[in-house]
Length: 299
Image (cartoon, rainbow, N blue to C red):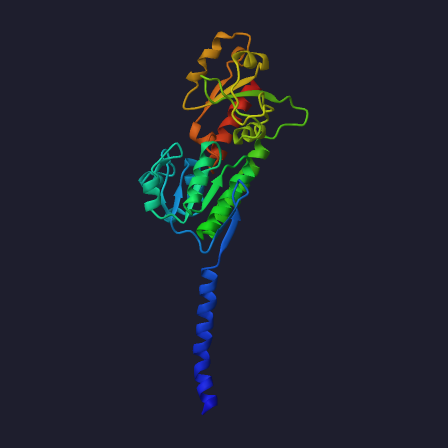
């Protein structure tokens, strides 16, 4: 009789054990490092995510976490579905009360400047914060993977990261310059008044290098340094580039006829959202930039 009871109960016990094992796996903690090297640990994948930067919104969508996002920041306009999500402002004018009311289990924030102060403020409210600041192409791919792990969407995220790396390699092969090729010197104008540019640590400089260019102010210490007109004239770049739909903001340089960029009419613009955001579309911006530098090289 006892043997018969054991044989009847055994499948039920086995089912219970399987359910316990599945539950433990489903609720297992996930842990990654953000771009500031903070260890981010969640007891289970995030179900309520808020993005406080447009590039972070794009990374989260690429990671497959669209259904997990409950709010975004201003100017999160890609992909199209992001426009339908409520905004909580931005790092400079954040609606903190609304953010807290949404009870996020993960906030992804731009990891530089004033945003760091905000990140610490959110942590003081016991909110888990992921600081995102990709500085190169691999960090973009890795960001997609890490965010997908935090969101429990690894299958989608890993596939997106693989595709990103494959396309990156294709761009490198297409625009790789011979070892003896003369690099094209590039000035990237972020802002005109004050005159601002970027150093080699910025993501845009990674795009310039891939395209066979050299950032004339790449060695400056600050990530986004302010420079003088005299410094720009002394650097005498072959190409001047800015982010935008057209290069009208560069027309003030046309008065300096001695500049190589003016002599050859090498004034270009790349859509700002493609090149200025360190998200998946950085490859679109890089390809557009490479085409422009290739045209300048041919001239």
